[in-house]
Amino acid sequence: MSKTEKQKMLAGELYLAADQELTSERQRARRLTRIYNSTREDELGERLEILAELFGAVGPKVEIDPPFYCDYGSNIYAGNGLYMNFGCVILDCNRVNIGENLLCGPQVQIYTAFHPTDPEIRLSGRELAAEINIGNNVWIGGGSIICPGVTIGDNSTIGAGSVVVKNIPANVVAVGNPCRIIRHLVECGTINRQV
Image (cartoon, rainbow, N blue to C red; front, top):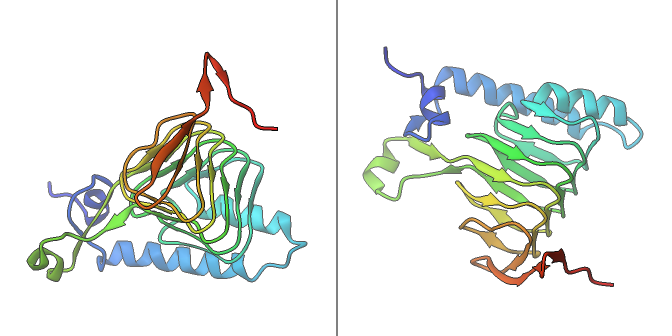
């Protein structure tokens, strides 16, 4: 039995995004994000209800300042304490696993989606997607881009404007384009705290 385009997408294989099932799921996400983005600032309960319907899983304490955009929503699995500032985007063509207490500055972009570099394959309309994993207690500075297939470890900070193209371990501060480690937080078994 052959795989559906959705199964190929989630397996990290070449797939056709124009597939009817995938198109329908993206339209569902567009409808829910449009409703979410039109909520008032005092409609926090309504916002949580929409996110619970949109995401694959979400913790009870979540705050995302509109506007927010995603491809499917159903591939986003977010832990408790998620905060995303204005204008964040998650292209969740593959699974995005978010630990507890993720803080995102404005305009953070999380991309599981990418296109083949071979122009012949790219012109066929087929795309690719790779899972992203973000640990607990991570802070991602404004304007950062998290690229397909990346893992960011617990307690790490990604500086504003960074482009994360490779895995970032736990307990570090990393910045730049491409993002690189500039400081380790753990020294002699304890986290280095700044005053």
